[in-house]
Amino acid sequence: MLPGQPSHTLLRTAIRRAQHQLLDRPLLLHDPIVVDLVPEASEPHILADFGGSEELLPAMFRALFAMRSRFAEDRLKEAAARGVRQYVMIGAGLDTFPWRQPGFARDMRIFAADHPASLIWTQHRLRERNVERPPNLTFAPVDLEQQRLAEQLAACGFDLEAPGFCSLLGVSQFLTGGALDSLLRFAASLKTESELVLSFAPPDDELAGLDLDAITRSVARTMELGEPWKSRPRARDLIDRLVQLGFTDVFHLSPDKAQARYFADRHDQLRAPRWEQLIAATRK
Ligand SMILES: C[S@@+](CC[C@H](N)C(=O)[O-])C[C@H]1O[C@@H](n2cnc3c(N)ncnc32)[C@H](O)[C@@H]1O
Image 1 (cartoon, rainbow, N blue to C red):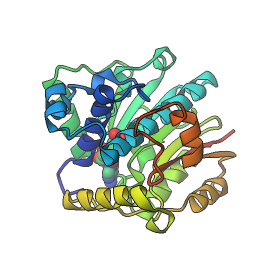
Image 2 (image 1 turned 135 degrees about the horizontal axis):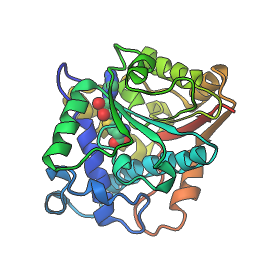
Image 3 (image 1 turned 30 degrees about the horizontal axis):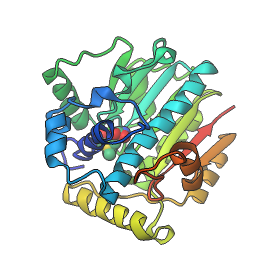
């Protein structure tokens, strides 16, 4: 991120999720809040800007951003059923979960943790739209390269002695290896029943065709925005590290599994991406 500036990538992911609401059926993620949340994600803006719903690469981006939130929220629901009552969205951006929280989340404490510059910007945009903060939502400023997430969260009321569910969606690629590993260690330090769901971007040599085109485009775009990619782990290495840290159940939602789970019945261009994948790691 550029010094003192909010992330620009958080707006792009929100716009894609808003496009998904307007252009795709069936929905992978029901998120009516994101449409109009910021002017750039409003219906007239999206429809005016949009080249055509049949274009493949835009469809793949919509699929990715909707799918990763959907997977995290599916897992969160299971975590809530086993008693987890704290949810930390790490690098929350314009994730709208707190404003559309289902019944199972109402007695949870939700923490939107993000870079201070991004948080100031998102809070300002929410105020502009008169979007009120739900009572169970806390904003937690943290620069993951400079500060310890545990300390920042504890200062905001997170209970380090109780289980927590953490999501890290579309963030790991922007972190140095050291900052990413600190996050994994933080999640592993939480009480049993805790869980981490994270997305990661595998290296180019594991990709081909449209997936390689998509990631090449993303890397170039975000580099122009001053947000270079820094971490591109292999699934195997990430899984080994999570097991080494003490996670007892590590599930890789491989592209094939994601396709079968979320895209099997579709007849449009949306399909499971290979250039960003998901892992859920639990401590039992
Ligand atoms: C691509 S956005 C993803 C936002 C959201 N998770 C989503 O899926 O829409 C990346 C997020 O990572 C955050 N981020 C990047 N570097 C960070 C850092 N060093 N500390 C804290 N947050 C950071 C940005 O502020 C931004 O909100």
